Length: 433
Picture (cartoon, rainbow, N blue to C red):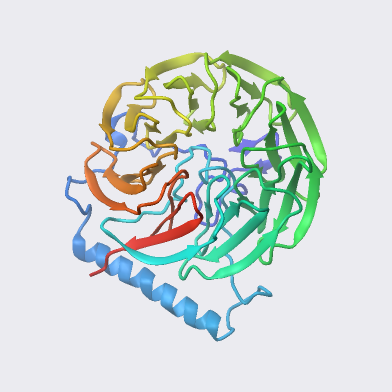
């Protein structure tokens, strides 16, 4: 598969684990999108899979982390000036991929225990970005920071010239973040040490940049979609759509999509910036669009979940949620998940919109859901992080952190990470006891 606008193959655009960096999820052979046959063929215990095998795998991963930490402490196996080796994996957009799963293909089984905490002391801006060995975040007072995934140790911290307006994204050893007005720049930082490689005058950008080699796509608050060269930040094209935007744009093979703070969803050609179609959503969209299996899925502040045909913009289905929605959907294996301010977690069949299940929780949710192959995770304004069986919504584990949670949890390796509204980062891992 070739992405004509980028001149690269899908193999070139994938992470080290082979997962498509562009988030266009491939449907395994013999599986029909939106069908229950596409779900894992497992029974419904609290701990899916053979307990002994899973524990052995978890112990091996834990042993790897211990050995890696020891090597790094001894100064070995490092190509970084900081003495820390970053993986070649990427987190190119909000949610890690354009299905907005937030999981990097990782799987962490409940129950969980707290591995470490780290206090940034500042409220987060946007969502966390996670790699196989590090987690990055943007915070108030112009701060970007990267932490070691295994220990929470601060690897580097950098202050920019103006308040940061977006969460970070990562690709090809580079971290991308945008700043607020009056400066209004998008920065490219070296992932190893935070050194600025380039900055581009883009105006205020609220949503995270979408970094798809060889380009970086951004939506400006003033209503402009821009494509920048990843190498030096030069503007490759800029397209105006005249409505305020606060999303991380969705990028597909032949279609780029932006939701807006008005009532319109707009699709562009990634190669030229030409408008392909518009859709009147009937309400503002505070989250980012999820592109998966030929569909564009988003939610509105009016409390509706909407699915469009990605090629034409035609409406496939629309469903009412449990309240206003300020989050992005997450798509996994033919199912679309939504959280809302009414405290409901909803699951719909991607291709038909059929309601599979929904759960009403005890607190509103501003954070998007996080989806893995077996589970769906939520973080609520009431301070609870939870894990559900994604086939039927059964609650498998929860932990009350007694802090407001406004951004989604992220998964990396065997770790589940969440940051509170005050900037305290919690990292949980599987309970191996």
